Length: 539
Image (cartoon, rainbow, N blue to C red; front, side, top):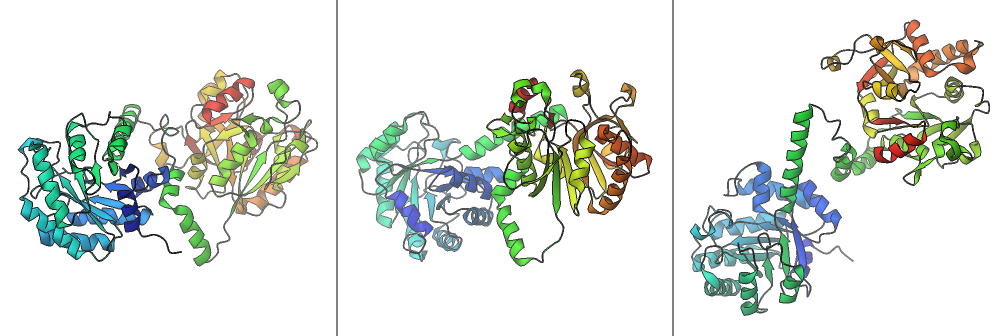
């Protein structure tokens, strides 16, 4: 069965026995959000489209600019769109050309209002606005209906008599003339805060044709009243643009005040959500189909062999990487972040209660000497047979997805992330991998090359530039040399006690550069019961 046309979908809404709803959208992404939310149709509002261009709702945005916006909206959605077509952008000739162009862009309907061109928004000195001559406006309707090639395309006529202060008699007179001229429905508009005028109109109009309302001013009226009165459609006409303006204002103020996005990053839509709404996944699938295959892949190693005895009874039967936070284990949260970055090949080093670490689609390496060895032993075991770029992180460190994106900006063989707010760990009196770099963090350091100088748990406070966050990336080119270095360290009597900061320091001493990415926050080292509580807020 062929897909129902958008024009037919709109007709179904217009003629539905139930009250239906349209919501304003003003570009492709707002249209897509509205459809995903569940709305069956869209109102391409003149006020909203003008506002997103930063101009007044006085036909300052040209009709061709409006068409361009509509094309993106129609491409992004499968639900019908009714354009707020103002006055039709001129006389009968402009209206019929407009209808042709709307049909070409798969727009289902247009609403034109009985005012003179250029129009002024109805809520700005409405009683001073000039209404169109009835016969002339009817010529616009007739020309538009004659111009359409799809019988289901709808022309709705907006009666502005109440706005201009002419009253019910004039509103009914105009509506009847427009109905006789071929209008598919009437949009009756009112600027009162109570629905007195529109209810009076509907009672007198009865069911001669569908009636649409825009409850912007009388928004507090229970929707049940509109339904009982028999209105066809109610339009929430400007709420998407108004809410986005409020949100952008608050975001801009906060960023300006703090000169930072740290506080906001977790409160706004992620970049991945923007990608999702843009349909990036479809493009990636298409690239898989059409583009030559690349052999560039990334993998990950998660070190999760330790118990985490500081968590007491929580780790009696499982390691702390399997402790649940918000219905998912810590390990699941970590793998989710890697997956979002496109990394599916993940190796987990197990140890304590290894049988409880059994998440699907992961590879496992077992460190059976976990009780007498440290993290470098686990890392050395997992490094065997690795032949691609890979990340490594700990099974008790949560971090935000954006952190992995920072690594993508660098091509160095070894890259580590360093938190400039190292005092957080110092204040908790816990061991931390402190670092000193060739340059401390500053506004200018982002344009400079930052490399590791020193790394350890016992750096003097005046030497510390930050704390390694427990996430690093190694290139496939460095793997052979790295394996030799680890083999050399393995011969040492204290190898079982060595940690990553020993490795980083050893690499630096050998003259191997370790690139440092300075960042702030957005990670959490889970070492205690208090950290488990904090992790819920972090997520």
